[in-house]
Length: 301
Image (tube, rainbow, N blue to C red; front, side):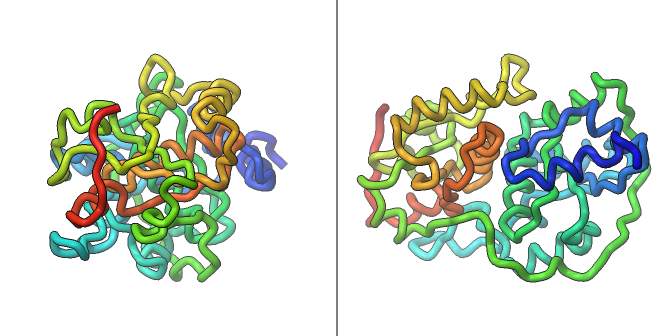
C-alpha cells in the first residue's frame, strides 16, 4: 500500500495528531491517488463575493468552494436582543446536508484551505469536527504554500460525488451561549481573537458597539502565524504562548470568541495543533453580545 497515499489516514487515527497538513504532504498524497475532498474557503468580509471570484479564477484541481455566508453560517436573526451574531452556526442538520453535498462521509479525508492565513479554513475545520468528522485538516500556508511547493491551480469546476447528509453524531466541539458565558465570567478563562484595536474599543468597523466582554483576554488570531502571515508557528511555540496566556488554567475550561465566531476557530485550531484540545467556542461572539444593551461592555486594555 502506497506510503504517501495513506499518510493522512494514519494521522487521522492518532487523536493528538496535528490538524495541519503541509502543501508537500498534500501534493504527495494526491499524486499517489488518495481520495481527498478539497474545500476552498477563501472569503473577504468587506466583499463577500471576492472569495468566490478568486476561486473561479484558480483553485486546486478538484477543489470545491465553501462560502462563509452560505455554507458555514446559519440564518441571521433581526437586530436586537434576540440577535445571535453576524455568522451564527448553521444547524447540525443543515451542515450535515452541506457536508454530504461536498461528498463528505465518516471515512472521507478532507483538507480545508484559504488565502487569509487560514482564518476561514479554521471555521470549516471546526464545523466538520463539530458534526463529528475526525478526518479533516487545514492546509498550512494556504493557497500560497501550494503554489510555492510547485502545485498548480485550475479554473475547471469540480464535480462533487454528492452523498447523503453526514450521519448524525454527538457534537464533538463544545460551545457556550451568551447566558452560559455571562454566568461563567470571572471563573472561566475567556479569550478574544480580534485585533487589539478592536478589543480595546479604539475602532469597530463591523459591529454596533466597540469594546469587549469584561474579564476577557486578547489573543489576536494572527499571533498564531509565523512572520509570513500564512503558516502556523511551530507547535512547541504555540504551546508555550498559550500556556503563558492561560497562566496555569486548564485550556479545556476556557471559552474562545471573536467578532462573529469565525476567527475564534483559528485560536482553537492553533491550540489543537499545540496539543491543547477541548476549549469551547462562543459562536455568537462580540456581535451577539453587544447587540443586547443589558450586557456589560469594557473598553481599554
